[in-house]
Image (cartoon, rainbow, N blue to C red):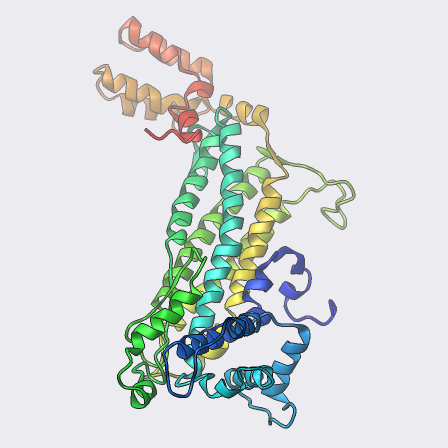
Length: 464
């Protein structure tokens, strides 16, 4: 199997997907469809329709157990769609195969006289729309959010641990002013927290209103029933115990407009962009020798250079985040568009939504693995800061401004820009300034390693 899989998600990365398959795989999709169909039948049987008598407690239990599928059940579903089964020709239609599967399951039960209620007045998109909505909701709630929370907590702990660890900040790649490693990590934790909060508030829409969303067949058959309210009842039953909710779009064509899909995918894209930024910064810190990686015994960094410990976890995270975002971008721009009342070009695209979640899972796993193997080299970082005393130029010119000196910025610019500056030269510069002894004392007290402003406080999450 490993040698024939087409996607690395089913091969080398299979172990990194956690529970994702259970929530977004083919079996999960089949179970979701069955849950929609059986919930619809249960609600119909409670409407006192002339051809559907109410369900007994035991019959409700029968319906509730149907979405729990065995390998044999899944094989039957595939046969009904592609090969035919027990005299039923191949449907070449996945939702119709589900309907026939349920008929086979119920024909020898007390529900055999209510088989006409299965898929009553529905179009396949009603079933698929609700099912896909729940797959997305489950994928976010049960898989991505827990993984993201682990990443966020890891960053928060690292930020506190290194809150006082001085680091030379670089803007445009050039030495700027000192900061701390913990504060720079906190930046990412803060950005991530905001996006996680938005993700938790997301909901996913679905369509459940017949062929083109008007409840045509429903009202033609039983015109006195409030069918939109009945549809909402179905969604309400399916929503139990969920944090990421789904809701029924009140007016639609045959397909849900899926604007909520785009909102969800764009939220995940923003998260992945933040984590791509983090992965690249960690790579650069490692490259600069400021972050050290733990060498794993027996692990190979290079096939020819035995000494290498490569930042492969952060590189793997970056690549998989980009793969995921390429798909999320496609989904956001493709899925809300459908020609007239519907076209089928979305069908094959929808089936690939799990891939974007899969690459995201691999990326989060790699990122956590990478963060778990690093240590900030405080001594190396401190040496670098001390070797760049010119970073005090900002503090000097600002203090001199406050002291009323004329043109302090220009004086510091001419003294430092493009010149090799030592701490001793800075002290000489201070000595020749025509300012008060108090101001000179204030300037002399500054050292590169203690010029960090509120970095430590910010790293600990104190923003006020």
